[in-house]
Image (cartoon, rainbow, N blue to C red; front, side):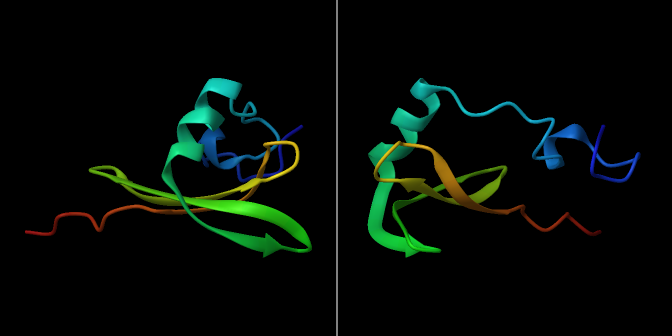
Length: 79
C-alpha cells in the first residue's frame, strides 16, 4: 500500500522509505546547529548543504530518531 500518487518517486513516500541507519544519524549529529522542541519533543537541529540542495533535520535528543525534515532542492537551470 502506498500513500502517494503512482507517478511520485518512492523517496517521497514516508511509509516506503527505510528509516535512516545509526551511522547516518551519527553523521547528522555532527552538524548540530541548536536544540529546539518539535511538538513537545526535544530535538537537535542539523543542517547540511550540497550541490543537491539544503536539508534541515531535527533528531530527537532521547532516542536519536528523526522528528522532522525539510529538504530544499536547487532551482532548475533555465536557459
